[in-house]
Length: 197
Image (cartoon, rainbow, N blue to C red; front, side, top):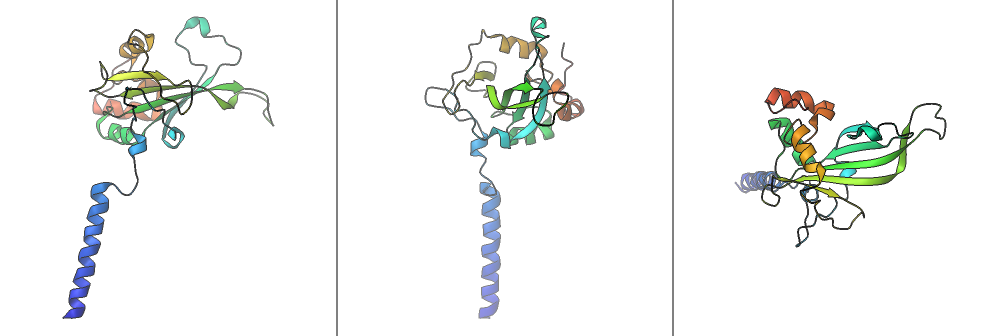
């Protein structure tokens, strides 16, 4: 009887441990994948965004025709936090707590064995962040221009053109999903994709 009781107790402990891991999300702490704000509502720049989901890279993209003929146009890399990405795959829309990071790097054409085309510089020249928080921001979204890595950033004023441009041209809820090839079909299947102008 004692041996059977011990086996049942071990089984029960194993089941409870499995339940605890599932309930608490102990498989991986995603708290750093969610927006972190200071008490005065400034955003702490995400430190490990390069470990997030890579959505796309643009080369020389500009929304201003006057800037279209730059000799060495920049690259931009777009990342989104994993919880938001997983939610988008299920729903075709972005949940509260979504963070996009646009990383800007200079392009280089000469270096090592490269004989043509461009590759990315090893220095980050700009970092822009787009955050969704329905309670915190009018319209649900805010933009940040992160000037100093690791230092809190204030949201750009609502008068900044980012807001109106994204509102008018974003394919899914003010975001430029039209430039993220792996997400276009998902948004279309879920009925959330609107043809951007």
